[in-house]
Length: 430
Image (cartoon, rainbow, N blue to C red; front, side):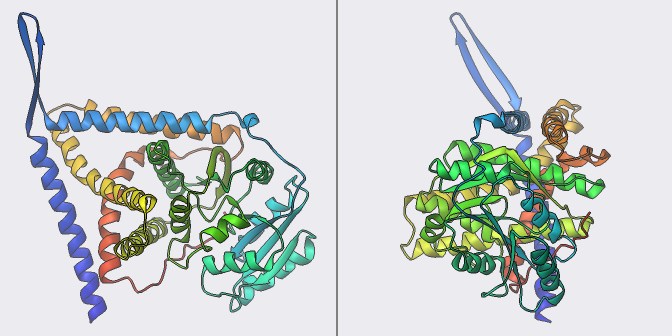
C-alpha cells in the first residue's frame, strides 16, 4: 500500500509540478520589459515582452554551446600524442547480464595497437551465463583475463576490486557494450604520461533506429550543455571511456557504490583538484536503448543518481567535510537540475510567442540544435562511428522539455519511491 501511495504521489507531483512551471512561464512571458538609450537630443525606448528576451537568451545558449562542441569534435586528433608502448595498462570491463554484448568491448580492446595492455573482465559471481562467456573470451585471447568481483553487486565494486588485483599503475574503464576506437588507449596513455590524472573520451549511442537516434541526439544535447561548465574549470569524467592513474583513484578513495558512480567520481576528482583532460574527438560508441521505455528508464536512473550524489554531497557540506571546491561541485549539480526544470517554463514562453505568430522564437533555437547534431553526426559518420540518423532527429528539440519532466519525476522518485534498485536496459548486441 505504501509503495502504491508513494508512486501515486510521484505521478501526481510530476504532473502538478510540470503544470505549475508551465503556468509560471506563461505568466512571466507576458511581462513587459523596456530599456532606453540616450542619443544626444533624443531618447530611444525599446519595449518588448519578457518571452522575447528569454527566447533570445536560449537561442544564444544553444548556438554558443553547439559551436563549442562542434569545434571540439572536429578538432584534429594529430594534436594528441599517441603512445603504442609503455607501462602496463589494465582495461577494466565490468559485466552483468552482458553475455550477448561483452565481446564488443573485449574484441575491440584486443585490437588496440597499445602493446602492454591487459583486458580484465570482471563478472558477478552469481551470473553464471556471463561468467562462462567471460571465461571463453579469456581462453581465446592472450590479453584477456577473467576476474570474479570481490565486491559483488555494483559496477563501482567491480572497478575497485580489479584495481586492487592488478599490478598496473594505469587503468581504463569501459562498458561491456562499448566499441573502443583503436586510437583511444594510445591517446589515453599519452595524456596520462603527459601529466593528466584522468583522461575522458567521448562515447555516443549507436543510432541504428528511431529510438536509438533520439538517444544519440540527447547525448549531443548533453555534451553541448557541458561546454559552459567546462569553461569554468569543471571537466566531467565517467566510469566508461575513461582512463586514470592508480594515484588518482586512490586519492578519491575509489568509485563509490552509488546509482551513478561515474557522476560521483567526476565530482570527487574535481574536489580533489585532479587534472582531468578531455578529448571529444576521441570517440567510442555504445549500444543505445531500443525502446522508449528503456530510454526513459535509463535516463531516469541517471537523474535519480544525480539527486543521490547531490544529497550525499549536501550532507558532507553540513558536516563540514566540503571545502570551496565542494561548494562549486554542489553548485554544478544544482545548476544542472534547476536548469532542466527551467526548460518547462521556457516551453510555455516559446508557445506563447508561437501563438503571437513569432515562429522564429521556436525555429531559430531548433535550427541551431539540429545543425549542431548534424555537424557532430557528419564527423562521427566520416570517422565510421555511425551509419547515419533516422527521421527522428527532428524530435531533438523535445529533449529540453523532456529533461524538465524527467528531473521532476526523478527528484520525487528519490524522495518517495526509490528503494535502491536500478533500471537495467535490455542489450541485444545491435
